[in-house]
Image 1 (tube, rainbow, N blue to C red):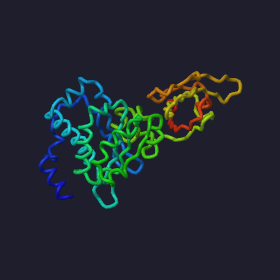
Image 2: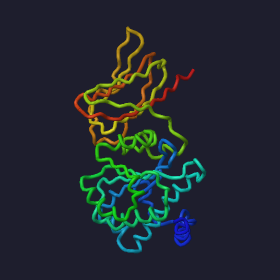
Image 3: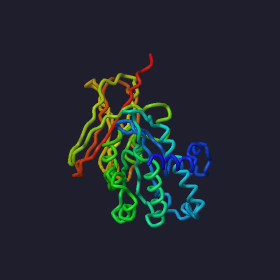
Image 4: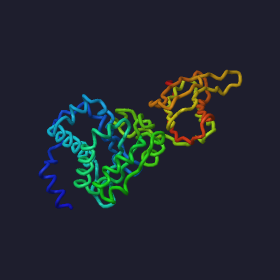
Length: 307
């Protein structure tokens, strides 16, 4: 197998593919991109093909055999970026995680491309994919899977993890910390967040169905500014924030009036507050109207007052 892979790499000229301009700038950071690491250090590659439900986009990328070949070369280019992040040492990180978003994916139109991509990676990147996570899996995935299954080895299929719509964050959190999960998938990582080094770790917690949770951030000095991020997988609950001064003569301040955050909301809460007196911030997450347990994460930063 290694000889065959080496032959393919020579014929495909993978050593130079990273330097090529293949004309897919509009797909960068959307269709396939490297973003962060999982809990044990594997680089993570995200794939999302929903943009191809637009027929014009589909024709520009897959309209003929030449375009298809160029797309496959671009897809290899993204994969090679991930390969460059691997260590290839005994006991080191020698494989990546693939996360594939099936939301709005045009199954019929992308049937040929999907088969080619899966076969290409399976045959030429042996053991370089530690896990393949499918998210936002629609009801018809079983039909799609039956079409591609004959092209997959048992070893490849054993790495698959399936997450239906509504369970995306819960599934990804099992493998990836929230500060590395993109915001559109229920995480805290916005585009560009990882450009300046590792992000501040988030605290993770779960909210049971019918439960209301209060997160208290104590010891905030007068003049200090607190900034916080909060995300709940699937949302569909009430959220609010208030500041409670230490002095009994002072009043509790409503920083964010309790309001419903619908499940369609993608962005995490991001807010800041400058305290006029010493006290604590209390974030309330009310899941009383739901029976479903939800995963959540938050983090905060306190900038002390300047002297």
